[in-house]
Picture 1: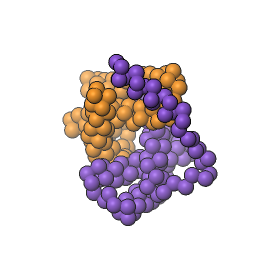
Picture 2 (picture 1 turned 90 degrees about the horizontal axis):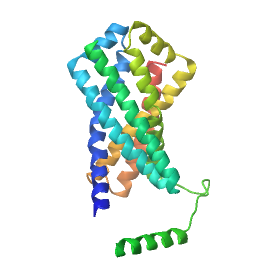
Picture 3 (picture 1 turned 180 degrees about the vertical axis):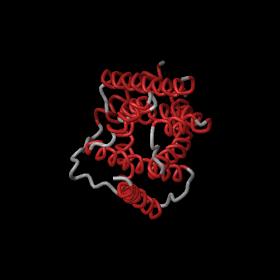
Picture 4 (picture 1 turned 90 degrees about the vertical axis):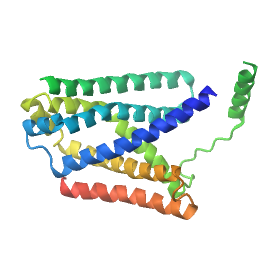
Length: 113
Length: 137
């Protein structure tokens, strides 16, 4: 029962985050491709715009949740020895949370500094 | 508890008896299978770049010197090649992902449409990546 519920939750998380990630990453990619920032101030001012800032702040947890569910599924499918699987999942969790906090730090320093 | 242990026992004996066929050159994957496995591969590639992308993001926002440093790191030939692979990964993951969401909604679920949309997602990713490369090599 709880296994099924957690599987369903992961399925829903994967799809709701997918919709947000698709929208914002497409906007970000098009912006960087068609109107790349000319210098530091232009880039900083763009990221610091309230809409863009909030979009980045939402992007971080959405990306982490999406990456966690996706890689977890891949590891469960291909890595059978339980010790190795747990080790890789732990490594993934630390790498993702570390990256996420690092990105948030960059965003908060930008807002206060 | 009793049921759980019985379940685990069955699961283990099933695993032992399950045939394994992993002769990669003889597995003929249908196009829908290619869309799926490439979705996985592109997802893994994208996740592997997260730490470095965050590093570049922080560096580029640290000041004018950091911005110039990040820009020069992205301009080497090696970085441009890597960016092309990542652009393809992003596009394939996006297009195949949209396709999977449509299938979840029950759209295009019959075999002919599913094959057509798999072809469309795979070729659109390659085509758009090359167009992007043409705009900003």
